Length: 60
Image (cartoon, rainbow, N blue to C red; front, side, top):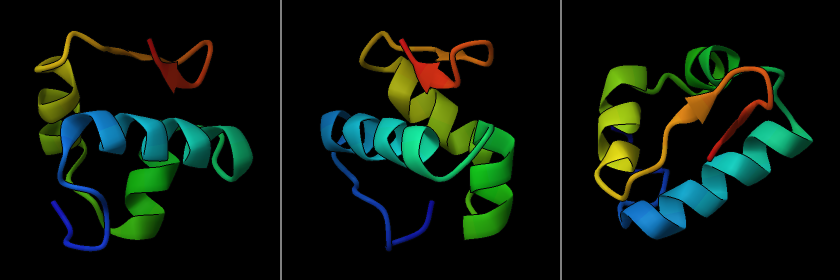
């Protein structure tokens, strides 16, 4: 993952959901735009029992 995003999974969760809500229509778009590894992000967030819901465009 990029050093420009939070490393702590709980803070990362909040950051991602805010970015998704305010700026991006999908996790894929966010990752493409920010040059992030989507698989690594999904894995890190799953460690705190959250999954990406494409219909809601947020981690739940």
